[in-house]
Length: 159
Image (tube, rainbow, N blue to C red; front, top):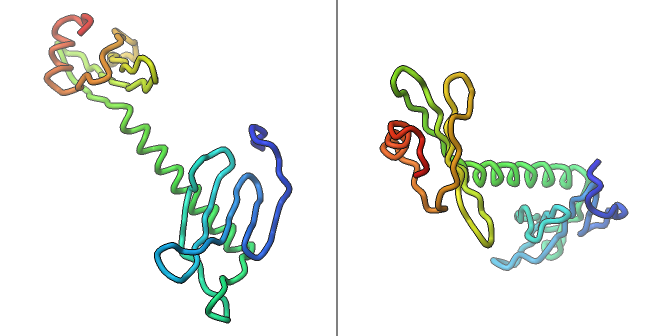
């Protein structure tokens, strides 16, 4: 169990549920006269998901929230956060595989989003899995096939 956030008591009200670090709240849909559900994960500033919610029988008020709906929304919000994290990681890491003089090299560029000194780490790993070079480069360094090939040909000198 994640203990990084204070444990809050479970709440299961018609328009507000809280359980296991997740909160679901029925809110007025700003785009029309309907309702929406806002799903938040403890510790995150923004909602993980906002989704339409159905009207109750009176066609005026929201339908009361229930366990299966809460579970479904939490699962969907978890998937949204997971995809977002994977996209963020992919944007920060690049890889090229190149052959030079009978050996294969994997060349990596990993962005380091530091607030004061943003930079990137350029590294090469040979086909035996040995890190042959690792250098700090400017955050705007572009990893292209030509740049990586030139770096390898130059003996992995600091770019």
